[in-house]
Image 1 (cartoon, rainbow, N blue to C red):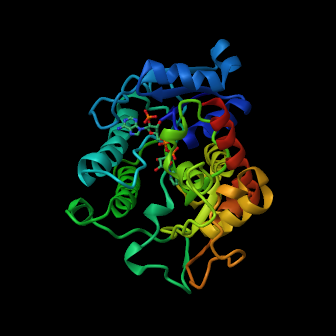
Image 2 (cartoon, rainbow, N blue to C red):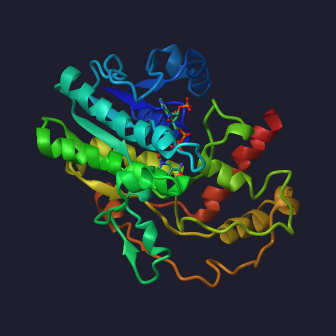
Image 3 (cartoon, helix red, strand yellow):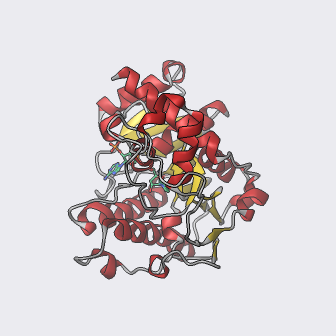
Length: 343
Ligand code: NDP
């Protein structure tokens, strides 16, 4: 079976491609340039050699016919391509339009070009679940039934932060997909995966330390050569996390399991704080101890009470067994040190 993975040069997509290839699927990845295709290939040389991993160029997901060629003859699609940045110049141009139009374009392309598609798995986010106006929301447990309520107009207006606009863009894009399925009743079905902050090893061969994806940069700033033990501990914007390998597994299960069709999954391990990440780095990785902020060791989430996460549906239906924060952070850190050694 040929699976299209959009945004193949991404941090999460690299792991998704890895698990699908290892499970015997053929993969066509979309990338923005030949140069990126070349670099992604370096992570999977044997699969490129025997033609099990190929690429197609999609320069901008926002352009109307962006996916018409890419979707031809595929049996499944994993749509990950979206700008994931929290600091942008223009919320509408840089976040809302590509996320929403990219989703609309792939939905239209499917209907026009691949009537026999089996399933579209869309990576959404905890961003599309959380209601940021409610703050840390102690005593509340987020689950698949929750939706970020921010409107397009609110997200686009001046004064709305990039983080708020990114979250709204993810929610509005996911809603487009569910509304499309409801309206058009296609023969294929839709599954969405909503992860919070995704940590773990960075296998993305297109990246370097200056251009890390947002969540890898989140860890690297706690252990980079410019950080030090007396630095203040960064404040959490989000309090939930998951390992990238578990997110990739969730996509595979979401594609394979018949009962996952038509379902939304909150794929999250649990709560975390940057203090907890710093404690792990300082205790378990002597190599970086003198770079990592000390903060208030072992204070966990600190003096704040925060929302909980309900991951029971992902465990029951997809069978996900979540990796621990320690395992994820240490593997992330090792991969970042490896990038340091290569530069
Ligand atoms: P990356 O930035 O590593 O990957 C994003 C991918 O999307 C890249 O391949 C990028 O291409 C591509 N892309 C972005 N904008 C466009 C565009 N306008 N046209 C074509 N391609 C585009 O991010 P992640 O791997 O972290 O994120 C992947 C997905 O997972 C996103 O949808 C994100 O919202 C979601 N997600 C991520 C989380 C995380 O913590 N990492 C948490 C929850 C959800 P290029 O390499 O050329 O820039």
